[in-house]
Length: 109
Image (cartoon, rainbow, N blue to C red):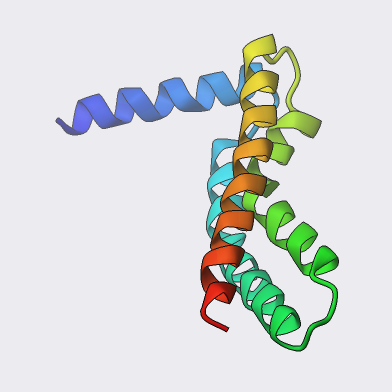
């Protein structure tokens, strides 16, 4: 079983080299984007309660939601066209999800 994971990890690293993307950095970006995402979401709710604009906090929330994908988009090379489609779908899905969460959290206010 350990051999399977080692060979799988080597395969992931090779794909990363072929596309100029470090899988470790992608994972780090993914994990590190979670706290600012949650903080931005709280910022949206706070601004909504205070009847202030939620545009900037909403954009911040969306940015942190898609940050790891943006890394692949901007620094990846020789990336298949369908990866770009997936990133666009993630952006749209992220905007929808963030909007839905904001509506849910602010509904009871």
